[in-house]
Every structure is written in C-alpha cells, then in structure tokens.
Length: 112
Image 1 (spheres, rainbow, N blue to C red):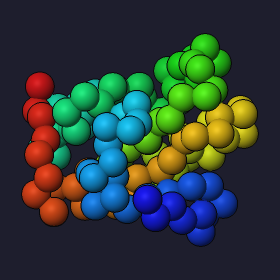
Image 2 (image 1 turned 90 degrees about the vertical axis):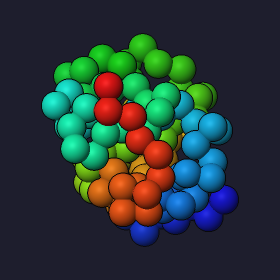
Image 3 (image 1 turned 120 degrees about the vertical axis):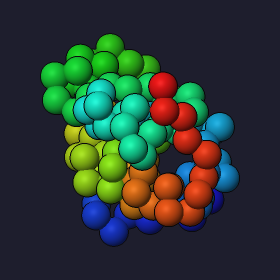
C-alpha cells in the first residue's frame, strides 16, 4: 500500500483506500446531512463528526486499531488524522480526495 506523509501524517489516495478498505475501521467525519446526502458514504463507514464527537471517540478508542478517516475532500479527515496521531494513535490514515474523488471514480456508495 502506497502511504504518503506529505502533510506530516499518513495519507492514501482514494484508489488505494478502495482496494484496502477492509483493512481499516472507516470513520467518516462529515456532518450527518453530508453522510446521507448527494455523495453518500462508503458502506460500513461510521459517522463520527469532527469536533467533540470525534474527541470523545478518540479518548475511548483502541489506539492500536487501523482507522481510515474520510470526509468530503480530505481536509477534515486530515485534521482527524493529525489529532489522532497527536493522541497516540499509530495506525490512522487520511483518505485524500475524500468522497468527491470516490464519487468521481464511481466507487459504490450508500445513501441511508
């Protein structure tokens, strides 16, 4: 798997994420209306909104688990990856391009 660290934390592109999604716990950090909106979400993804919800999740989550953070374009999920790394998580990764790129590549999504 091609993991980049150009932004100071691990990132993978959408194609790599699609090919390896079963290796990760998928956490979508968008707002609830985005999660079920026009871009939908990746099947199996959990909605944990960036902010207090994510903070609470990270405080109680297993720091050894592999997590792939997802958002609309990769910005908010990048923030989530950065914060998780600061909190001691070793296997968190950002999906660059987000659901915009996922949709552009016509990978499957769920709308409910």
